[in-house]
Length: 71
Image (cartoon, rainbow, N blue to C red):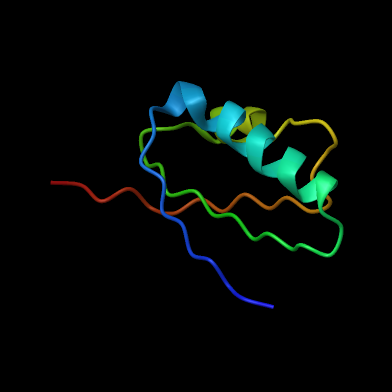
């Protein structure tokens, strides 16, 4: 087993499509395990949750918020 690390810089409107692509790969190849994080301070929590709505559904989803850094 190997670990592959990917950092993706994509427009926020493509987040759901990218997650769907990854989930399809996961569903097609049993035994694979993915952990995905998103750091997107300009995205609302509602948008982040919406991006995680894929088919088949993720087995676990957690959303963490953090204080915004101000000037």
